Image (cartoon, chains in turn purple, green):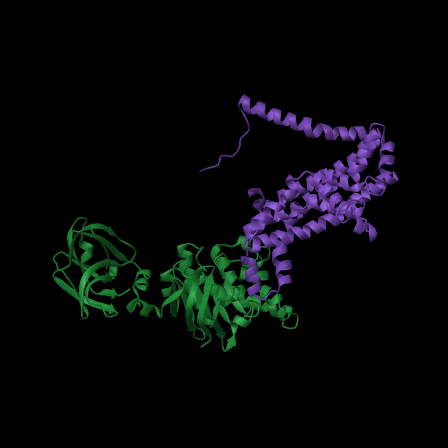
Amino acid sequence: MKVKAPEAPKSPAALGLMAFALFWIALIIVLPLINVLFEAFRTGVAPYLSAILEPDAVSAIKLTLLVAAIAVPLNAIFGIAAAWCITRFEFKGKGLLLSILDLPFTLSPVISGLVWILLFGAHGWFGSWLDANNIRIVFALPGLVIATVLVTLPFVARELIPLMLDQGTDEEIAAVTLGARGWDVFFRITLPNIKWALTYGVLLCTARAMGEFGAVSIVSGHIRGLTNTLPLHIEVLYNEYNTVAAFATASILAGLAVVTLILKTLLEWRFADELSAHRRH
Amino acid sequence: MSLIVNNITKSFSDFAALNQVSFETHSGEFLALLGPSGSGKTTLLRLLAGLDQPDSGTVTFEGEDYLALNARERRIGMVFQSYALFRHMTVEQNIAFGLNVRPAKERPSKAEIKAKVQSLLKLIQLEDLGKRFPSQLSGGQRQRVALARALAISPRILLLDEPFGALDALVRKDLRRWLRRIHDETGVTTIFVTHDQEEALDLADRVVVLKDGQIEQIGKPLELYRKPASSFVFDFLGTNNQVTATVSGAEAAFDGFTVPAIITGDLTGEQLVRFRPFDAHVSKDGPGFKGKVLSILPAGANLRLEVQAEDGTVFETQHAHDSDASDLALNDTVYVKPIKVYVFGT
C-alpha cells in the first residue's frame, strides 16, 4: 500500500480542525507560559533578580540541581541494567518486572512520597531505629533523592528496552567471539549503540526530576532554605501572596523545561533513525 | 584431525536439539552442516563457538579441551547471517576490533594492526571503502567485511552461520565462489551452516547432513548424491519422483519393464522407489509410465517436463535442450522410463 504524503488542508472541516488545534495549544500551553514571564517581570527587572538571587531561592535551585544530579545517574545506571537484563536474558518473572517498571507512571506521586514516610518517618517501620542511629532520611536530602528516584525510575529503561530489543545481540556476540571482555563489549559496542536513546531518556528523566512536586512535597517537610526544592519554593512563595517572586522562580523552572524541550527536539531531528525504535512502541 | 566433536547432546527443556552428534574435521577442510530448520545445526554452531554448553559430550581442537575454554578464548572467527557489523565503526575499525581488544601484552602495534587491516581489505577487494560505515555498504560488501573481521584474529576455525541467507540469488552465487577461493588461500578450517543443499554441495569438501538433532550422513558431495544413506538425505538433496515397484536383487520391476535399483538395506517385494528428474528418459513409444505432457519449462540450461500419468501421478523430468524431449509439445502422449531408481528402508 502506498502511503500518501500529507498535504495542506483544503476542505473547511480540515481548516477548522487545524484552527481549533492551534487555538487550543495557544490557550492551554503558550498563553500560561507567557503569563509566567509577564507576571515575573511585571514590576521590572530588579524585583525579578532579587527574587531569584534571594538566599532561599538560591538554596532551592542548588537543592533541585543536587537532587537531580544524584537521582538521574542512579536511574541511568538502573535503567541500563534493567534494559540489559530484560533484552539479553530469558528468565521467569520477566513480564512481571516489565509491568512493575511502569508502576511509577501510573502511581500518584503523593503515594510515591507517602511510602517513604511510612517506612522511614518518625512513626514508620524503621523510624525509631533510624532515630536511634541518628540517620535522617525523610525531611532531608536522602528522602528527596529516593522519592525522586522512585518517580523517575522508568524513564531511561523505557527508552532503552525497545531499542535494545530491536538491535538484538548479534553485535555483542560477535565482539565476544573476537576476544572482547565484558567491559570492552559494554563500552565499545553496547553503549555506543544506545547512546542517543540513553541521552534522550536521561533528558526526560532530568526534566521530571527537577519538576517533581507531589512525592517530594510529602518527604521534604518544607524547611525553608534546607529541604525546599524549586517547585516547593514556588508553592511557598505563592501561598504567601508573593506573586512576583513566585512567578520569577517559576520562570527558571519553565526555562529549564524549554531547554529540555529544545534539546529533545534537536535529538529527535538529528538522530531520528537511532530513536525510531522508540516511536514504534 | 583438527576438531573432534564426540557424542554431543543438548536439550532445551523437553526438546532434544542435538542427540549423540559426533564428527571430525580435517585440518584446512571446508565442512558444511546441512539440514532443515530445527535440525540442530545452529545449536551445534553455537556450542562450537562457546556461546552455549552441551549437556554431555566432548569437543577437542588439536587435542585441547575446547569446552573448558570460553567463547573469548577459543579464537573462533564467526560470521553471522545478519552480518553483525558494529554499526558505529568504520569498515577499518570493524576489521581491527579483534586486534584492538587484545590485552596490552598481546596486542600488535598500531602500525601492525593497520597493515593487517589493509591486507584484509585487499583480500576482500574493498580497499577503497575502509572509511565507510556498514550502513553505506551493500549486503554482499557487508558480508565480506564480516569475513575480514573474523579473519583478522587469525582464527583457528571459521564458523559461518547461513552467511548468504540474506542476500539475493546472484550475489549469493558470486560470494560462494569467492568464499571458496578465500578459504583455499588462507587454509583455515571452515564450518559452514546452511539449509541450502545446492550451496553445501557446491562449496564444501564434506557435508554433514543433520535431521532432528542427529547426523543422517557425512560424506563428500558426490557420495551424498551417489550413495545417499537414507530417504531423508535423498529427498533433501533435491526433487524426485516416487512410485511403487517390485524390488528383487538389484532390479525394480514395473508394469512391463525393469530398471536397475540402488538398494539401501535388505529389501525385496513391493517397495516405494525414487528417481531424480535427470535420471529419467522420455519417448513416444514405451516402455515407461504412459502419460501426457502437462508443461514444458526451459529452466536455464535444461528443459523441464511435467508428465501426468493416467493414474494422476505427475512426474518431473529434466533433459538437455537438444535431446528427443525438445520436440515434444503440450498434451503429447509420452512414456517416462527411469534410468535408475533408489530404494530405502527408512
